[in-house]
Length: 152
Length: 152
DNA sequence: GTCTTTGCAAATGATTTGCAGCCTA
DNA sequence: TAGGCTGCAAATCATTTGCAAAGAC
Image (tube, rainbow over all chains, first blue to last red; front, side, top):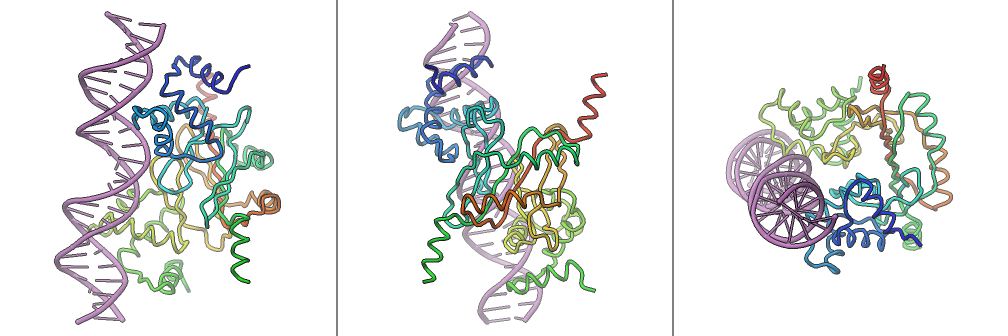
């Protein structure tokens, strides 16, 4: 069976890059933390646990490479750091995010919510859409509940 | 008649801040360049033309202040800099952007495209939306035309 | 061997902060 | 005169780059 790593390896090869141990360790960390939205520093610390000799610069270079190959998406929630998110396999579009202003949690929405909107934009603005970024800022279900409990 | 500056002045006062000459100069630059998406450095250079003694730190501090008061929105298109956008008066929601991957131009969409989408998100994810960020990356009408001309 | 990739340290660039002086209530 | 506000310079933080050594084909 072809694993996810195998497929990423192929993608690298077809762009004439190698899956070095460092790159593999980095990809594994991303796979094992798919739900999180790790910064380069986060990834570095996690990779370091398995491969202590790795350098931060290598992590940055790998993440940049993976971004180029569209294996990951680089996102920015407005705090000063870039975060890296594995692209869902087969997903045509970048997924969306709900960022909680209370607790900072980030929830992913994989469903494509923008089909109709993109049609309108392409038609009315004559803009050829290649990608999108949609983030909602607000209060997550958890924090809403906490708030209403506090009011009791 | 109450000008836009007057209203911003009131907003500052009601949060017990003053509209100092430096702050006023900064706001004026933002008003005069509403269509652009200026970085702090951009704002600094423009303010410097009128008030050469101003410091970059003051511009940063002013922009931060205006962001807090929701007079401007701080946005990030993925290049390493924050940009500042005057919030449209009366606009309930932050407007959207089309970023051209060819020429880097940024077009604003003031229309609210997300009404339906927000309803879905609030209902299905129990997420109380306070704000949103929507950016499309693609090719603007101009660059599309240039490309098809080159192919001739 | 040649070309790619790496780790380290130094460089860069955006943004923030410490602080002494300034201005205004 | 006290506090907010400013300009400057130094500090910080994320990210990038130069370079010599190490590794892959």
